[in-house]
Length: 255
Ligand SMILES: Nc1ncnc2c1ncn2[C@@H]1O[C@H](COP(=O)(O)OP(=O)(O)O)[C@@H](O)[C@H]1O
Ligand SMILES: [Mg+2]
Image: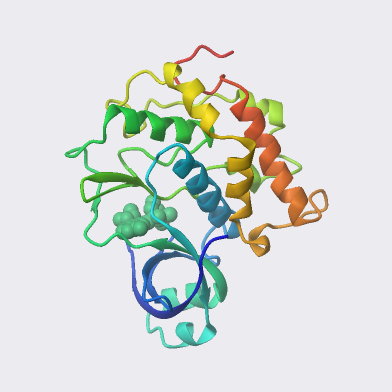
């Protein structure tokens, strides 16, 4: 389970983020980048953030710590900016907190990660179908000389159309990933020889633990996925099928 805290103060919006995340202070004295349940595509984005961060950690990709932040209606009431007030009002309840990395720099290529870490990050993005790590949107921070991966809300896009229009497990497993525009393309070496080693780190237990980190109330039920166990099982089925394929590994001829 992720730590549960309560927002005590909304500090400022992060204007550079497309989803208007904001900085908040919380009851544990921590400062977080808050990703709002009421933003854009809603809870699914928060689910993707939690699941992919769990997988990232397991394969040695540094990610900021996450927390679940409860947001009270009173905090929205005191916000002067109307756009932010609307977002806060729409987000009363639990939201995602990403530990704020003070003084971190957006990735510009001047302090590239090792080839090893670059390969892990591209492999993770290929596995989770995350197209949101390009030069126009690196979604990497450099903090104390270490590269951190952030912003996994665009990954696992299949959940936006499931269950009816989502790809079958077999189709998702075979879907290629184009790493051509990936921000770390030129830093990474060949991914194909890395696959077996990285895949082995993502055991069924690791996958289940990442899915268990998602608060039940963020898992939206549908007619075909009537309870949270069914929703988690659907993620497990799709991700396991993809893990058991190599068709998506960049640089490998479709298998
Ligand atoms: N944990 C963090 N610490 C410091 N800055 C962050 C952190 N997370 C995000 N940011 C900053 O906020 C911006 C937007 O966050 P991001 O998660 O990418 O949201 P969006 O989904 O809106 O793109 C990032 O590009 C980065 O500059
Ligand atoms: Mg981003």
